[in-house]
Length: 383
Ligand code: GLA
Image (cartoon, rainbow, N blue to C red):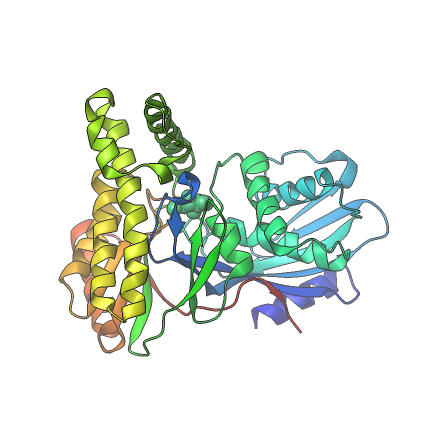
């Protein structure tokens, strides 16, 4: 349906036959705020996506149309500048990076739109960046390998959008696989697909619909706090490049030298990294109950030590922790709003939805949106 709509909008606006690309959003089961600390993450690409219809032009004109916002943006390759409309920046950043990498680009026409809720922590921005990078690589036969596209899409967000995000979102966007989680080592970029298959379990997202106003500024603050911790430990010698190289013992030994806030941030990251690896072992053993417990622990760390949660997210996790059939729940993504991710027994999903909606409304007077998600492939061209 969505695919047909995007394609026909392309026909109406630009004419001709476009390449169609599907670029998914993502969930992250565990491993939050670890990617930029060279740690581990466990994301998956999902059934919500951005669809692109795109075709090359013979001059340097770039014409973009956001079907969801019904807005047009036009520019030329030689004069890329940040736009106050904001959404074009996710696209322009990618074009900018490709040009910087020396790619032989020309102008293009693109229509895009989809069903990933914006600012909900499902990485709609990485879906736009990864999707466009993939699409331009295809239509101009650039032969750029996927990992290079990932890095380029991440840099687009860092430089053009100004969020110093890690690599998780762009990585899973391009490397995601159906029915699989992806365990990524954000230092070596080695990865492993981990099955998440139990027919009686569902991944349910609860969206607070609180837009993450603070997220981008506080995000950069958290990054700096982690770097401060690393610098402090580096003074004591040893090979410490990031919090990835730090153990709890090491942290404890130097506790008194730390600003207490910086200490809490670092402690969370060190614990979360260990948790991701243990959680993967739980999955491999088929111990979903233990896996779920680690999700709750992760949330507690994000709430109390890393302090990127919010009262809405905390309430959702608290409700989930008391509901039947919920194995694990935590806030997901950068934080301060957006969604919680819940692993729920299929037979309890309906009851869970009802309890969450009722309790949330009763206690916060708000309305929570629920999405049941499935794990789908990463960015790919559509036939
Ligand atoms: C955002 C960033 C990611 C990651 C998460 C937190 O989604 O884009 O790189 O840091 O926050 O885990």
